[in-house]
Length: 145
Image 1 (cartoon, rainbow, N blue to C red):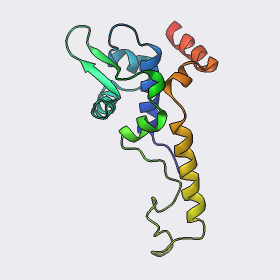
Image 2 (image 1 turned 180 degrees about the vertical axis):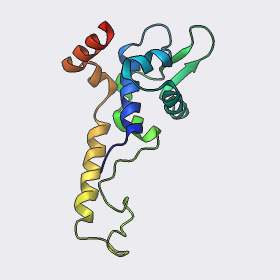
Image 3 (image 1 turned 60 degrees about the vertical axis):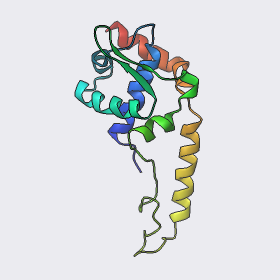
Image 4 (image 1 turned 30 degrees about the vertical axis):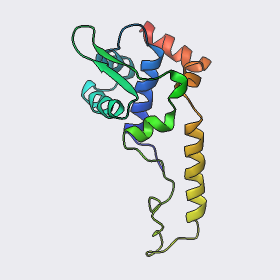
């Protein structure tokens, strides 16, 4: 099981958006620069995040993106799911055909692990991440460069 770049970048971009939210929308170019993610890739991710009602967009001068809800109401599992990412520890993607069409001996173990990971990610809000001291320090270092 591995969280792909798409899921990692989506969480990082949403956390960046949450940390830099102001009265004005945030430009994707600013997020791209701070996070080292290409603007084109962010555009793809934010299109999915917008369709899943996690961000709002505004066009024109001063346009950009803002969170669609309060930070405490957006969790990491939602963000990962919005970009079509699934965290599944089974080798069969949960289908139950891991051993020649049948369940393998460890299917339930990995399925339970997937459930625990999902429960954990549902419990982590953007707000809780924004208020972690180590994340705040990283943000300060990123903004001073």
